Image (tube, one colour):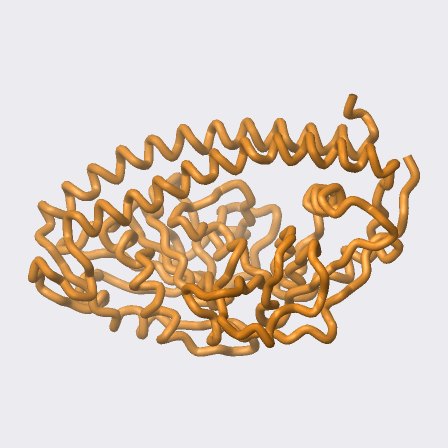
Length: 367
C-alpha cells in the first residue's frame, strides 16, 4: 500500500474563515458552531455571515486538544485553536477521518499539536478500498457510539433524579434552606504544584482525569516522587473540582471513591464536605447545567484559559436538603453507578476490538 505525506492529502483551509468566540455561542440557533472541544457541537448562532467559507465535508482538528471531528454540513468555526482540514487529490474523507483518529498524537499540554500532525504519512489504497474500509469502520464505530449514548443517558438520569427529589436549584420550589457551597464544606484546598512524571511513588489526579460526565478516569496516570504531604492527598468522599480549563470544561467535578493513597494536582481543588452535606449531592449539584452556567459567568480568562479560584467557588449558592434526603439520593446514585460500570466494561471491550480493526485496516489486512 502506497503512502503519502500529510500535506499531499490535506490542505489547511482554516484561514479566511470567520471565528466566533465562546461568549457568542447560543444554546440553540440556525447554524452549529464547531470548535476544538470534545462536544460535537459547541453551540449555535443565527448569523449566516459567520458560516465557514469552505465546502464540506472537512475534518476539524483541535490544535490544543487533539480532538478530531468529521463535519459534512455548513458550520461556524469556533474560537482559536480549531484547524479546518480539507481532503485533496480525491481521497475519501471518511477514510482519512478514521486514519487520523487512529493516530497517537503526542501531548504537548496546552501547546499546539498541528506540527505533529503535519509530520505523519498516510496509507493511501485505491479509492474503492478506502471506501470499503471507511464503511466497515463506520459500522463498527456505530456500535461504540450507541454504548456511549447509553452512558450519557445514565448521566442525565442522575440529574433528573436530583431535580425530582430536590427541585430546580435556581427557583428552589421545595423551599430548602439556601447556603453557599463554602457553608457545606469542612475545607477547600488546592492540590500539589509539584511536577508529575510517568514514574514515581504516589499516583496524582490531574484535570484530565476528571471527565465531563462527573467520573474519575484512572486509565492515564502520572506520579509524584517520594512522600506526599497529607495536604495534597485525597480520601474517599472528597469532591474534586477542576478550577481551570477551556471555558466548556472548567468546573468538571467528581467524587473520589478510591483507591488510596492518591494525590491531586494544583489545577484541582479538593472540596471536603461537612456533616451537613453528602459528597454525591454536592458533586451532582456542581455538574448540573444550571451550575455550569453560573461557573462560566464567574470565570476569568487568562491566556485563553478560563479560571475560577477556590474562594469563588465557595460563594455559589445552593439548596441544602436534610442529610436523610441526601442519603436517599446517594443510594439511588449507587444503583446508577453500578449500571455505568457494566456499560464501561462493555465499552472497553468494544474499544479494544475497534482498535484492532483499525490496525488491520491501515496495514492492508482487512479481508
